[in-house]
Length: 224
Image (spheres, helix red, strand yellow):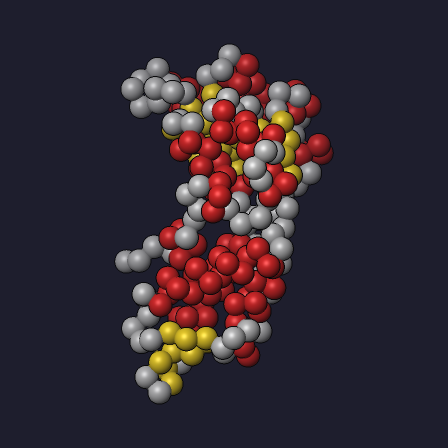
């Protein structure tokens, strides 16, 4: 079974990430912190599909730390303690990077459970939220973290990702794959700055394409 296209195209380096140049551009403080290896506790704030999880994964890889990915809608204090228990083993020799998605769903007690381990350096926390953290994250945790805003990605910066997705789909379709000229731009413009949504749209277009004259043609009408 083939992996979802969005996973296949997930960036592996900061240079491959679409958008977020206000954070990831050369010389930016955020990028310099990552490249130095001295990563602070951080909160990523912004809409879905703009690279928050991807950037956390790249940080873990570049700083040679084990990444623990938790979602606050299902995780709890026991999950945090299980990670801490693992830190003294060979599984995480360089410490843990905990990526906590949707932190706004952690209540005050759950968020406070993180503080001890953040302060003693047992773990580095990257929390993400689609909500304004200054309303949903408690002050004690905010004061120990740096907040970075991720923004919707402009269509012109999504278009290269759409083109890469189309090229990958050429290798997956049973018949030769072609598309009308405006298809990449229409997909990039129609997904509201969400890179993942644009790649999923490419996958859907290809799966729904009807064979014609021995090829699969993606039409502008279908893209719209």
